[in-house]
Length: 323
Image (cartoon, rainbow, N blue to C red; front, side, top):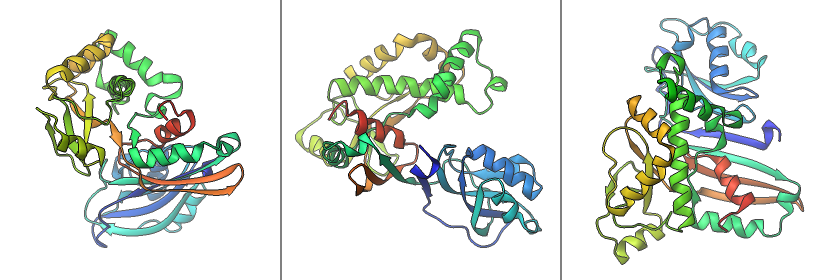
């Protein structure tokens, strides 16, 4: 796999205003993580790393396009800053002023273009599986990059919880995130085995498509099942932490039973003060397309909401455990 095989572009619902203390840069990077790119931008522009903002963390082995912001009150960017950034693999396509720093998690979605080659692309059944994913959505697993190389972040979380988690040892919360993600994936895997990952049950917490609004289903009737079938509402699973679980009846009992098989992670998250939240079990593909470029070459294009993983789409498409 090369960076050009995995292209991702952030999608925003707003644009820079054209004036303000912060210079927003629409960049394209390759072979760099987002924090690495931010450090290069800070160095070239002569500011502190904390003066650079970005919305999403993007993979190293990819071509990624995203906004970053630089706090430059009362001054322009240094001469030839774009040339200096290009020397380290960062292309600046646009520069606009804005009154505020770019905050984490403000982009709405990501648009992916993935190139497949070889036996996977030549599989005659792949197009059928792709159509099913386009129709039914994709299990919203956290991808392997959340857990680090060989699951290192989860191992570190287990060790940290055993001795007592400390923020100074995990300043960006990667260990906490890995633990929550693992527990969510366990709940989702159980719902997949039971074929209830898209089907509401009494006690499920459902999220309305395209929003953060959610409600608990006390009763599940034909109308609610039909709304779920067309993707208007989706069952959720827990992002574990302290606080009220929100789900009810047998759903809450099942979620608690599943996560308590990993009691060290559960107790560690609660002790660290992480607040419980919910995440959709199923995620739709936005404007999906598949293009053949030869008998063993194809290109996939699709959008995903912020926080969903393209690697989870590939997992279902290539391994097709459910299809």
